[in-house]
Image 1 (cartoon, rainbow, N blue to C red):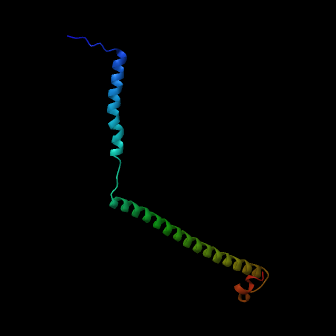
Image 2 (image 1 turned 90 degrees about the vertical axis):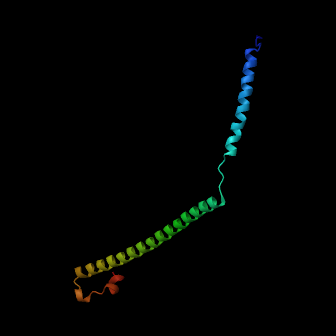
Image 3 (image 1 turned 30 degrees about the vertical axis):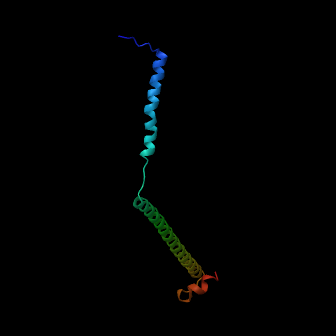
Length: 109
């Protein structure tokens, strides 16, 4: 039987070459298996995104309407408070309840 006369360095180089050959297809595999979308899938993704944006706009409009309502309520409450302050002042000064006009006294405090 003939003896194999390869050196350890030669064997190591052969092993590295074999590993390099097996690694090349693995490097290409992820590119070949890259996720591809059909037009229907892309359309569905775009529709979902558009719906989220529309919902966000509706939420912002609802928030703005709620803010406007809150500001109006606050203004009404402040007006009522001012009228009560005027009435209280008038009552303390001896003006009869029948002679107190909220609107007339409101700005003549």
